[in-house]
Image (cartoon, rainbow, N blue to C red; front, side, top):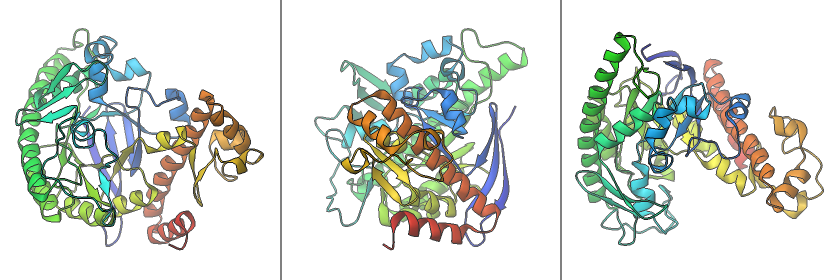
Length: 416
């Protein structure tokens, strides 16, 4: 089947909307949160648990799966769906984020999101001498985090890997930049991303044409995933510079992508404006995905400015360190005050964890480094963010978005 994106409701006066996105493995009701399983697994959770908590989509990481077990193994297993036992829609990223995380950010505390008062200093380049990723015009040379061996990703290579992995949607190869990069470097990286986008799109179409011939002949691709169509998303870059974001969205919007990702660096204060600037230039009839965003307020900012999908590792990463979401904000459930607190994390939460376990028990598990503690906290956090975005979708349908946003923000973040 082909991909079909149907807008069902629009947010008055804004770019926000609700939609149904049909994929070969089921329809996605958007806006939606995409759970991240970097190595084809949500840490500590089975796919059945993920489905039970309400997740619609699952995203895996191309760079990590290339290293282990290798795309050939996944292909031989029948693709990511068969390999992981997830039968819903799946996505893979391109490996472009690792150009940042293993490059400019390697060995530092630099995040892709900065604040204007954080005192960050722009640097001339987006690479470090001790980094594990080096960007060239041809692609990115990585050093494996396992054994230090060299791995070279080109746009074409990324497309080939992702085709073999077999997710429903995947991303063009791009260069994710640091918020510390100068405007000059942000432009350089953006223009390189545009050139890589053309190469990615060309290779994607070549591979899809080859696959189509198998489908028409009623054959499976030998030793590979079931021959279903795959969609390619281009990635808008430009950093925190609005004119670059606008230019990037215009250039990519004219290319024949199936959807678009908003990637790269942001400043926290201008995130909503940057997203609006990009989304206003992108085709209205195609889905837009915001890469690596998991803070509750950012869901509201993203949705009202035109975002349909979000992904982030934050819910499970936070959970493993004892930080859990509540309607009144995050709490550190490993704190001493919860050692004898026999109430659930949230009394009116609908998740399995809150219906069966207490703060005291989860506190004990995490303090004693029992694996179950991270699993229970992760289930709750994923349930919280998945259903928050679901509720945002519902508020648009009900014409109640502004009131819902105001109430949530006031309760979660307080008067500030």
